Image 1 (cartoon, protein in one colour):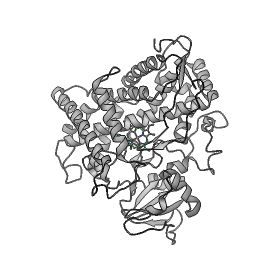
Image 2 (cartoon, rainbow, N blue to C red; image 1 turned 30 degrees about the horizontal axis):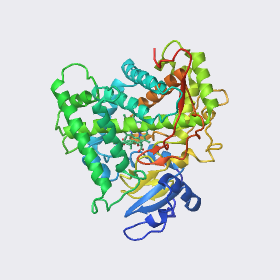
Image 3 (spheres, protein in one colour; image 1 turned 135 degrees about the vertical axis):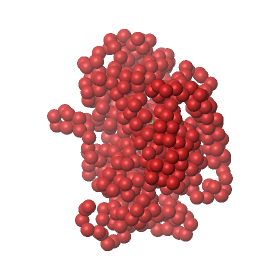
Image 4 (tube, rainbow, N blue to C red; image 1 turned 135 degrees about the horizontal axis):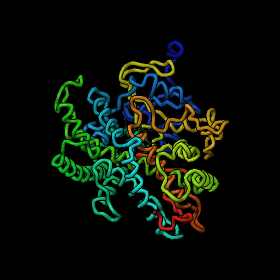
Length: 484
Ligand code: HEM
Ligand code: PLO
């Protein structure tokens, strides 16, 4: 523990009954920027009322480390939210489910399945590389014309997750793939305009267009996933699981379905849990990875010198005669820095997912009551001028130390940390590495003639996305067709 308890209360924004502090949160800024601005007036730790909910906002990395790591377990709860409850059948997933013994067991099961399929196995590498080949062919098919790369990237990433979760992959134009992409977009558009921090308690009372669209998309999703689940159940054999869905089904029976041995009185991992986990792996896997790729490409269009340096590193350490593989990762430190810098300057989840205090606890010596909501503003931590030199500048070198070795500064936490750290972190890192290295080995990105560079401001939906932009590509020698 730090110094003794601090007596003063945490500075709090004004508030009204029912509305809470909402009137003082106007001005149209998205939450991560608004909160950063509020630190100038209230300090780095302040409180506000989101509707009736007392909420602490953490804006510096020491406090974030207390919340996520040092007292991570105290703050591992999740609040009850109308939209995410709909999305997850009342928290039968990992990300939005409150802390419970069953949740821990469930999270561990998912984590183990990811380890089984992912991290370092050649199978995952093959899955990603085959999606990469498809993507490269598609990108290069545009010739020298400018185009918006987002649809192709999102299709490629969706294919990786589809293979991982239920062993299907799709060619361009496949109907089922279109269905998946369109329900997913529908959910992204409606789940939480302006980020997950918005808690509209009125939504349930005044049903609106957004909420009914969300429900429609969830219905489409559930129909598709239920079909996959039934197919998998019918084909479930004794061998090693083929995909995440099989691993979950096996984990479910292996653990004894409906057993009460996980320290809870609830039932075990139900079919609903399996379905919600598959849906979530899908949603999380696609939105985050494709958005991060789009941000990095947008920054490369602004900084052609960075792209050239990555390509030089690739030419010297991999060459152009073979595809890049996971084992090349240690030889491509600068690329790693580019990926980290992309996730620092534009974190896809700038305020993480809201946490809640499970017990009475403290932050920075201030007492925090059980049930308090806590928002960790990773944006302000990643842009804190006390720790980052010119934080608004895209500069991958900041992830190299004086000796040219990679370093990870303590105030860099794009995946969160502690009991609620992203379960997909290694998968995501592997994908980002293989996608970017392969793309830059095979082609160069540039601005189409007469087109201005991408707007880097971003738009906060459920993740922080770049506004649509156009790029043009040209093949590097030997890669005219996109793949070998
Ligand atoms: C949670 C970031 C990719 C699955 C999170 C959180 C962040 C994050 C910031 C919230 C941590 C918190 O609330 O404290 C990212 C980034 C990614 C990425 C930057 C890619 C660049 C993925 C992938 C998957 C995934 C590929 C799965 C296939 C999850 C899940 C959670 C989560 C299930 C909830 C964990 C929990 O609440 O216990 N991620 N993520 N993520 N992520 Fe990721
Ligand atoms: C994306 C749309 C999907 O249809 C449902 C879904 C599930 C998990 C969510 C994801 C969405 C958005 C990004 C989230 C992820 C869990 C962890 C991840 C919030 C809503 C991040 C970045 O925190």
